[in-house]
Length: 332
Ligand code: PEP
Ligand code: MN
Image (cartoon, rainbow, N blue to C red):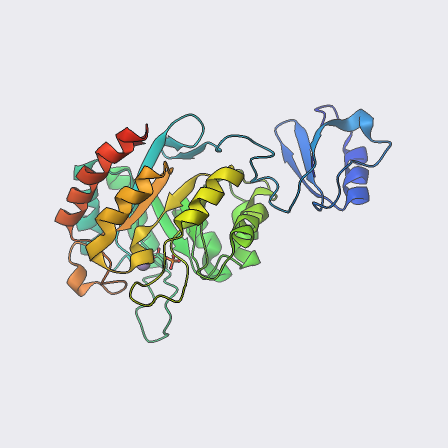
């Protein structure tokens, strides 16, 4: 159950209510918001004078649910707004990893020429082998910050573990929580303390409920700017890297109020079908598309097989624009 207090509510009484209901408590503007365990369906008696409104919930998908907020939350990514009534589909693009100043500058120049406003690039890479390229770390984040200064991009970069989460929060504009890191409460709780947008990727073995609940850790800490990113789950199929769960996307759209970003690159794992998949994603009326693009994928230090060449990405943008228009969306 979610409880909104009245604006004039006395903080001592609010804290007593939080204790009586075992709630997570945070402040929003002039009021307090309490989130009880979902099995509680009614506030205890004696607190009517401080309660403005309450919403009983059927599961611990609470702050992120449509039952609480029956529209997609508005999240500002630099100058661009997604969710709300904006009908925007933002394209976030760039290399898997920041590899060098030359490489990220080439990417930045190209993205700028296409009107892309959100540049991605990982600096702390969650590799499956300790012998693979692990990312440039802080040096990479500084290169991204340089690209923001020179070109005005909104910078999206990922957190691998809690040891450097504050570094990413400081240098990036959007904090990406990787698929392998989304259960890390140190990361999620640190992301709750900022108001920068947080893009949570779905773990490849994560149920939709668990995925939505990861967002609750950030939302209930007082950061309302959370987006969910479907990037493929592991199934019996081995011909593709993962399986993009579009059924899951339909569920997320129906039951959560969080902007949905789709990442066809990590799902398929190969360049050949990314453009087709992107059209399918955009046709679902999503809030964003995340695509990996590299100036020369043949020498990429991570995810080489799936990153698009520049001309392929230009073609992809041309291909998705009429699809977006057909479903009442603008590519931004
Ligand atoms: C990435 O975006 O480069 C990445 C590692 O993604 P994921 O966490 O989805 O594997
Ligand atoms: Mn990648």
